[in-house]
Amino acid sequence: MSKLKKEEEYRKTGSFRFFRWMKGTKDPYIDEVEMQQGTPHMDSHTLEEIMAEEYQLRERIYDHERNSALRSFTVVYRIASVVFALLLIVLMMYLVAGLPRIGTVDRPVNNEVSQVYIENGIQDTGAVNVVTGMILNYRAFDTFGETCVLFIATTCVMVLLMKKEEEIRSNQSLNDRLYEPKNDVILQKVAFILVPLIFIFGIYVILNGHLSPGGGFSGGAIIGAGMILYVSAYGFDKMQKFFNEKTYTIVKVTALVTYCIVISYYLYMGANDLENHISLGTPGMIFSAGIILWLNVFVGTEVACTMYAFYALFRRGGL
Amino acid sequence: MEYFMYILLAFLVICALAVSFTKSLLNAVLVFMSYSLIMSIIWVLLESPDLAITEAAVGAGVTSILFFITLKKIEAIRKTQSGEKGKENE
Image (cartoon, rainbow over all chains, first blue to last red; front, side):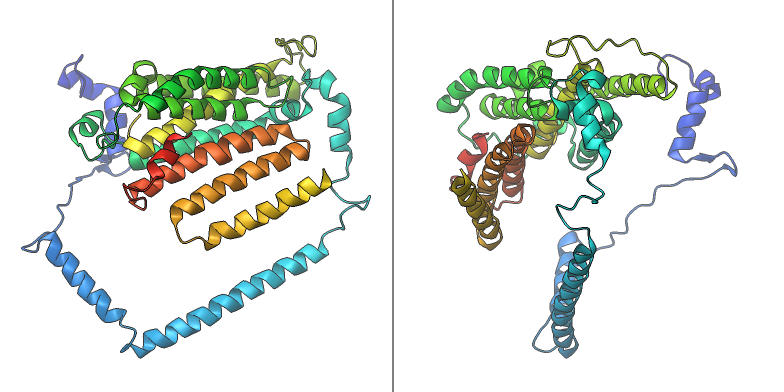
């Protein structure tokens, strides 16, 4: 239902048809379909009565002393589980015994890949830290998959646990700060000193990822931990002043989409033997290593948002 | 240094066993936290500081907090217990 257009006009637009198809009121192949929401059958029974009946039934079924079938089933089940576990162990041992021995030269692990990474790493990626060069340049596509997994994970948690803002505010049982000592002085003072330091350290780890140990994932986790510390000291109201659901959405989607664009450009140019216009710079400088620095920033923001979102969604059901 | 490594590995095994054998869920989470910390020291000794940072931040920090909140949500931590304070400790 659009507010800007009139009803008849809106019916002619493509978006109306799209949303109608999404809701399932019209199938493009079969024509109009009547969709009616079914009402749950709740006759005269209340929920308690149904639950009581259910419990009675359960007690009758799971009565160990009288139900001999259940007793024999329990015995068989235990024996079968032990046998199954032993079989699994034997199978795995057998497979492990078939693997090539550790330390021999002709193992599949001992191929030229690691040698090439170590020798050509700096020329190819421009990163002094070979590990970051590997995961964000040679294998940047894998890391993109991991970032997508984080995104999907938070989306799933949101689907399961997200509640509306008004609902959180009105429902006091969800507001679990209610029974806590509200302004814990020690915690607030510690957070006042520590949170900026944690943030700066996290940003350092992210931005220095191609020079020193660290990188997007670890830095993002550190920043996320700092945000969690801040929120547990000062509460969600203060946190929402600079990080609410809107900021979260913008930051997270922007990071993922930009990552996707950068990596697509990089892979397309590389696959077609074209020269890309991202200069590698001097190895060892902060603005060097081409895409790695920027990919670190995107991965870092993504991870930080994920960590904080998990905490907030678990704690109060909203960001 | 080798003996230090052995001590750490022994602690690792003890922690791993203790997690599965403790009755209290809160203790299990705390032991798991120390498992992660020992693991991060081992990563440093194995010369992979990248993993050590991640292990310390994720394993000891964020996962434990998520476990604490979950325990609180399913009311496995009683209000009088000191679980409230462990959660705030980041």
